[in-house]
Image (tube, rainbow, N blue to C red; front, side, top):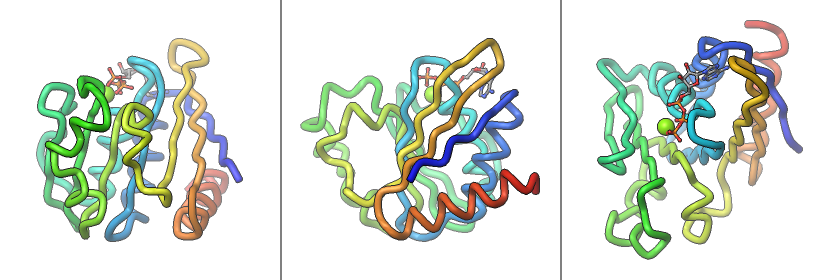
Length: 158
Ligand SMILES: Nc1ncnc2c1ncn2[C@@H]1O[C@H](COP(=O)(O)OP(=O)(O)OP(=O)(O)O)[C@@H](O)[C@H]1O
Ligand SMILES: [Mg+2]
């Protein structure tokens, strides 16, 4: 099952992230893929807002990971500058993936080998200046329910 959503503006993408963040539970893992400038960080900022994170959420391109406090801990990773999965071990990724917080990884495909099997894959493609297709692909029952709920909310316009 794949849920395909259309975003017409950064605001749309942010709102989808916010919805996802509001529905997120302990241990959830969101894996984002898409080209430079696709909108991964915009979506991540929405997720943070939906989790009740206050203050600035900046792109962790150079820091690799930013930790925030919201309704649940929020771990925002960007592994673009990582050499590969080996470098992930140094980061202590397991504590994040298998901990009680919500983990969001930008450029997740780079570390495909260490990603948990159960996760929510999100692929953003650029269709035009402000147009994006956001494909949500659940892996595992927990994420299937999440994707269905997301689809229901977005399609009903709430
Ligand atoms: N529908 C849209 N959804 C998201 N962003 C959009 C949309 N339309 C235009 N944009 C613009 O595209 C850019 C997305 O930037 P963002 O930093 O989120 O990309 P990214 O995928 O995180 O890139 P990077 O790989 O460099 O981290 C922003 O400048 C944003 O304003
Ligand atoms: Mg980014």
